[in-house]
Image (cartoon, rainbow, N blue to C red):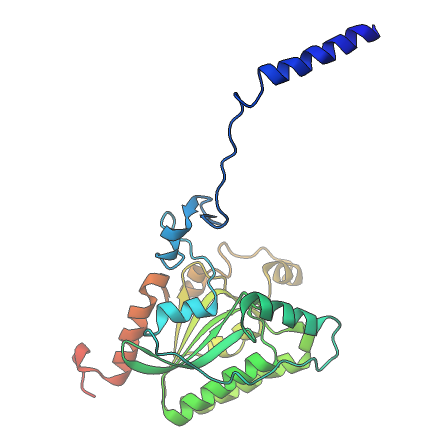
Length: 296
């Protein structure tokens, strides 16, 4: 019996060599890293070059991928017009939270940003603006002391210079590693916006995916005009937390951009490709431009 199994084993090995050898095997398809991107919504495999020229919007289903702050500047501001401000602010560890400095250093190395927001001045088709953009790739765009301070200083600069203000929000909320210091940024940014509003200046808030937590409950919801980028999750607490708290089923589509539009949280929903043109039109209207049949 042992000889039988030994003989059978040798015959199988010979079979694999002769019939299932290299001449019959399918060659492994080698695809360079990043050549294709899988859409999170429709699961299509998309050629990365096609999707990049489409502002990282899926050409099949129009799903909007998350994008970093610098790319947002590239597709929003006039080329070469962005001048960054408040780059000297440094994140510290006020609560001695374990591992927090290492986490900050990790994201700085990974994103090449110092913090989760980029602020400065720019122009959109020749109109100068103050521009702030949260970066969801840096600790999910969470708002700590530096993020809140940069946003506040940007608002104050726009107030002093009488500039229209545009802020793109993308955040998981207040940064837990800074505790009460992060929560204080909600009141601070809101107070700065109150002073800005009293000057009769224009603030356009653009909510992108996701805009939640302390950011959603402060400056991102205080715009004169609030725009939601398509496919954005917008809300305060997570759905599971809310459901467990109120012990009720949540409405269909809760916290989606379309749900927020129906309930008056946002004024309009825009495709990323249309955002720059629409922002320009709003800026012109605010100026009283003759292009729209009004006088300055």
